[in-house]
Amino acid sequence: MIFCICFLVLLTIPNILIDLLQINHVKKFSQKPAVILPRNDYALSASYSLASLRFSIFSHIFEAGIFICWVWFGLSMWQAFLAEEAALGFILFVLGFLFITSLLQLPLNAYKQLVLDKRYGFSNTTWSIFLTDTLKSYALMGIFGSIVLWILLMVMDYTYWWALGFGIVFGFVVLMNVLYPTLIAPIFNTFTPLSDEALSSKIAELMGKAGFKASGVFVMDASRRDGRLNAYFGGLGSTKRVVLFDTLLEKVSSEGLLAILAHELGHFKHKDVLFNLFLSACVLFALFFIAGNLPSILFSTLGLENNHATSLTILLLIAPIVSFWVMPLIGYFSRKAEYRADSYSASLTNARVLKEALIRLVNENKTFPYSHPAYIFFHYTHPPLLERLCALDKTPQCKSNKP
Image (cartoon, rainbow, N blue to C red; front, side, top):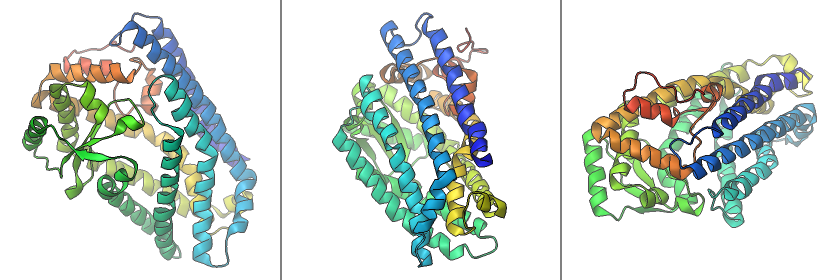
């Protein structure tokens, strides 16, 4: 019971309260004159934001219900699936927990992609694509999860297994960052080399100015699933590549595209990717430390044996709580990094062009311009666009988010 109350007090209730603050904020600003977006799109973005927030509240309640079910009876029942063979039982227990939790959340994901986002004209995902993506994700979870769990099991009899476990999992995270562009991403999307030689040459010149070397510039068929715009640099080391959404190429000028890529190069220049890996390592270390030092009374309270499988499963259960309270710190540094990247882009290209490109992104993605400070504090990794525009204009004070 105490475990459930902690989950509700530390995660569910704060999330709901923050969403309610954001709902009231959006309602208030939706009645004011439109900014950035045309009036109709401004109203549409407010409507989508409110619908998403209401769905978010339902999701928090639903996920709390899943947590309570696991704690009250699910884990003790699932413990019966521990096979006689230690390695197999360990892997089945932890992976089974992940699969069942994911299956229970599948209706939420389906509604978000196939109903809510489609209703507002964002999602192009079909049932066929959704189911195929889900099966591919489960297959990858099974393959990579089994490998990581098997390696973890080999070190969990050591006194400080949690420190070794952290090193193994973090090493896997780094490896996935290296392999993602060439091994994982192509499983879900098609990547084709950029055919526009003039644009490709300009991108190469831009990367040269920043000292960035990539294995190529690729266009991703993002429009199969979503109509929103984006671009990113993926991978680490020799696998680094530039990825442009096909939707971005269709709706943003070449100059705007270069400004957006220059922003991404700013992250590279300031080593933001490495810093984000460091922050991830800190969070992961904290989780493993907690999992390795859980009091025995906790296991008896939950009706569980104190063993490797239950320790890791409890780690997975508490991970959302830790992540929620660490997110403001990560968000703070991330927003600072976005301002630096904007400044770098403006110096490498043109501040006016970057502003126009950012406004274009908001127009196409129908992002509501205003957010409550608490919502920004807990959820935003990027500053609100109006504040980014103020920073690019070097405006000393920006009152964009105040009534």
